[in-house]
Length: 81
Image (tube, rainbow, N blue to C red; front, side, top):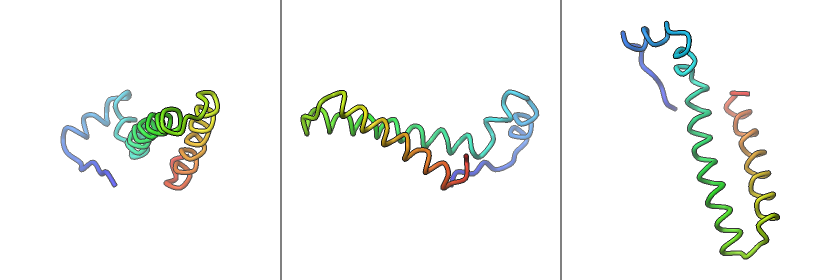
């Protein structure tokens, strides 16, 4: 996984109240997982709507609902939630 190695700069950043939360491991996990799921949503919506010709409302409900549940399960698996 992604690790941040201690340095003088990182110690100074952790001292700033607003920045110290961004150095937390769960923040980086949440950011990368969210980026991957955003790309997955776009791909799956394109696939279901344009390729499989499934209705937009039905496709959106299935994809967004499915990836929402999948994201929650992944966050539980890596112990963020």
